Length: 213
Image 1 (tube, helix red, strand yellow):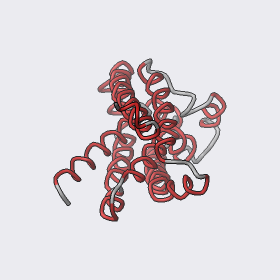
Image 2: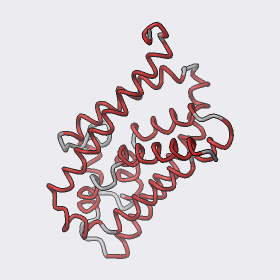
Image 3: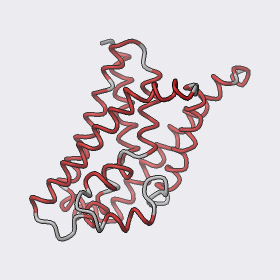
Image 4: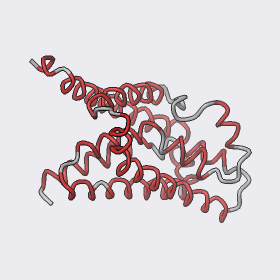
C-alpha cells in the first residue's frame, strides 16, 4: 500500500471517529446503563461496538449497490450527505444530541430496552445517518480492490474506540466532566462541519463542472 493510500485511510479513520464521536455519547451510555452491574455494562459496551462495526461494514460494502439500484449518482449522494453532516455538526457545536441521531421517543426507549447496546446506542447514536453516509461516499471514492478492502481498517478502529470509550466511561466522565466532554463534542463538530463542506463542494463540482471554473 502506497504512502498516499495510508494517509487517506488515516484521514478516513479520523473523520469517521469524529462523526461517531464515542466520547460525546458517554453521558448517554451511562444514563442508559444506569443500575447495570459491571458485567452488564461491559456487555452493553461490547454489543454497541459490534453493532457499529457491522452497520458501518454493511454501509461500506453494500452502499454502492443501493445507490446503483435507485440510480443515484455518488456526487448527488455526496451533496445530500454533506448537508446531513452539516446539520449534525451544528448540533454538536452546541453540545446537543442531533435529532438525526436520536429523537425524543428513542431517548425514552433507551431507558426501557435491555439491548441498549444495539438500539439506540449502536444505531442511531453511533452508527447513525452521518457515519453511514460517510462510509458509502468513502466506498464509492475507493479505487481498486485494495482500497475497498482497506476500508475495513477505519471501521475496525472506530468500533474499537467505541468499546474502549464505553468500558472506560465512568473514569472518562469523572476525569473530563460534562464540560470536558462537551468541549470534545464541539471540537468534533467543527471538524465534521469542515468535512461536510468538502463533501458538498466536491459533489457540486462533479455535478456542475462549470462551478470549478
